[in-house]
Image (cartoon, rainbow, N blue to C red; front, side, top):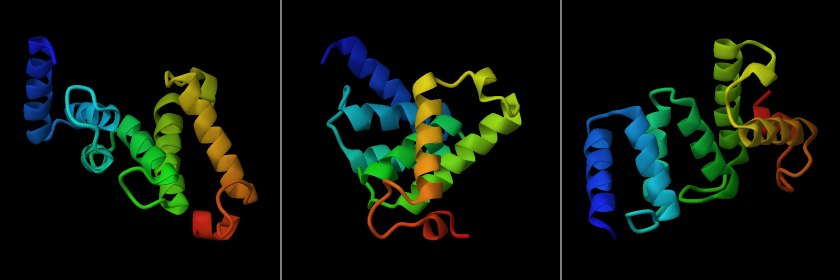
Length: 137
């Protein structure tokens, strides 16, 4: 690893340990993809969770993705749907109902829409999942 990369990881880690949500999200990303640190999904989920607890939408999305695919955490479609719902609510609250105005990546918007649609219809969320147990309603 290049010296500059190691130095960057050190600064991100220090900021994350000081409770900076954006740094916690960055550390989660680094652990998820093994960039400058050993790949470790459990550690990635831990960092994403710390930032998500501070309502950082991108971390809520990243943690939801980990729950959806069972990376570093047990696969849990209901938890993923809850996290995606929190992201969706923040985007709507902060940027209005019209999602085309949301400055999130198109991939994130499509993923949120696709996953929420599959949860509502019970398609593609697992054999034992249904609309009622995914949304708890």
